[in-house]
Image (cartoon, rainbow, N blue to C red; front, side):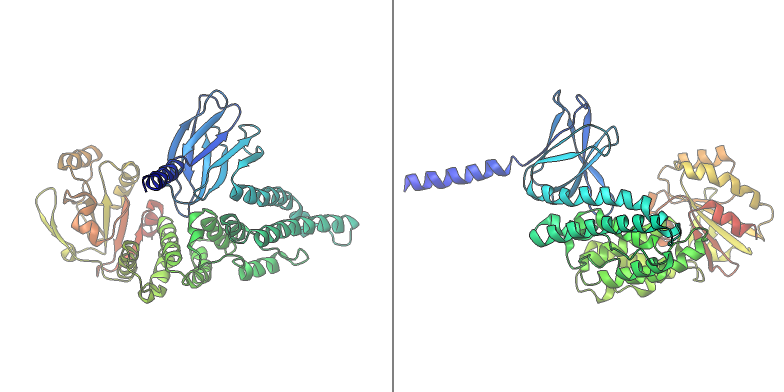
Length: 452
């Protein structure tokens, strides 16, 4: 019994030892003494999760135990990025140099050997296709050279498809196979016109994407797929309004396809709303808010709750909606009631003393404001600072003459929370009935409204 117990203990100790030694090892000539960075390349914002020093032999090691499986990148100070898959197994690779585009040799890691078989073909063929497709599009079809170029381009397209099909068929259960499918482009007949190709791509773009599989969220290939799809709906010379109108059917398609998996749907919704909010695409945000299927999803999570709150606020802070009322005291001690302000337009400015964009843009708005005649425009600045002295100093230094409210609770200031403010400066332009005319973070957009 003692021998059996000792054997079992030794077995578990050995298993634990192996579990603690999962590494990602790389060798890149010419980087001795430099730092290299391990970047988690999942869908959404990428982040640096570790740093390693390159030894005199050009070798470095990252400890990987405890890290989630998925796609990572090794990034150098020279700008070189090596894309790698991690699935709880050791990874070892070498490159031929420290320049971007250097050949990557996978020494150990079955997943990466499979993925690089595809990636090497896809990158080489795609680079050549970018050069050949314009020739096929514009060269006279009657010229014999046209057929030569067209045949070569079709061969390159087929090479990508055949490589992807072969690897996915041979290794169907691997992470590599799933990421190959996610990245795999749709081949379109080259004899079609550009418009016909675009229409076909819109229809077939997600042909190989499995929206039911949450593993697609473990790769930045998914967000690149989303961006690529939206790009199909944008044309040169489009105005901001044109882009918003054009993106609506694309957004509908993305959300309809991702609804089959709650986590994928929540990520897609968050990614789209975050991006559109950053670019000030308020119509698109409102479109998403009105057509969201969040309430039909059975799960409960912090992300779902945050998105529900964002959607509620988007609808209630949309142009045409009444602005939330508030009462507060200004720095001068006067009580200000928003709905008592008598002006054709009221401009709410959410700002902070520490915000460089505020310092750069707010002084330019003073030409629209006359403190002795506020019938046309009254400005109310709401600070999200926590330090009253910093606010007072900024007001004095910049010479702001409009009323300033400072609740000194930072982003938790009640007025800022009511208006769902997440960036400074943020502007709300209200009409005389206190209905929202415009919400924007772009001072140029605001000035175009004030100039009319």
